[in-house]
Amino acid sequence: MAGEMLADMDWPMHVQSRGTVGTQVHARAASSPSSLFRLLPFLKSGNNSFGEGREAIDLMYQTMLAELTQRTMDRAWTADFPAEGASFRRK
Amino acid sequence: MKDKRYWYIDIPDGSGGKSRRYVGPADDPEIAQRVESFKRNKDDFRARRRMVTSLTREGGMIAPDAMSGDIVEASAAGGFFRLRGVLIGTVAFQTCAGILGVRLPMAALLTGDADLAQDYAISREVEDTLPPIVELL
Image (tube, rainbow over all chains, first blue to last red; front, top):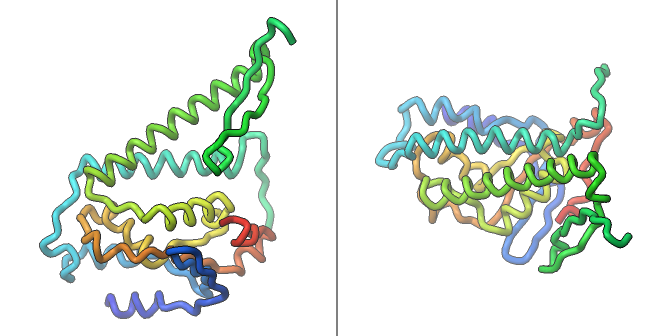
């Protein structure tokens, strides 16, 4: 199952690449972008050794992460689409 | 003008200094509202920075190295994620710690690169593009 998912994520890539000091940056194009989140049910299922022996993160910090994610997405939305703009539908 | 007060905002110039920008007269209610909104945003930004510090120092989550973080931030500001770009590779995997609720081995995740993927067909269809990547960085 995981093999199929990983194979599905092996996209065609390499449109351009650029190196910077100490870090490589690869700007890649994907013809069928998939999401890392598709792997999560498998990783959480227990049919793997991913979580074996790993220390759990306290629920308080998981909750804090969820709040941070929501607040950051809200701010990003406001920055991308200021209230002065107007929305409309288009085909 | 003498005896009149004005709002200014100092903005980092990216090289350690600040550039000062004029906002408007302090007695203008609309300007005062905008400055108040700016202060609220600034407080929220600081609060979020503190949350990131707690999550990485105490919560067991992993932050990317500074260079990778700057690259992802610049890409986001340029509209990369708005145009349906996704993080892949090491930086994407680092986010799994928080999502799965398990501590990941730090050493295995520090590869010092940022991998980004984007379907260019989306940009073409919505007639919107990122600025040249070199300008973003």
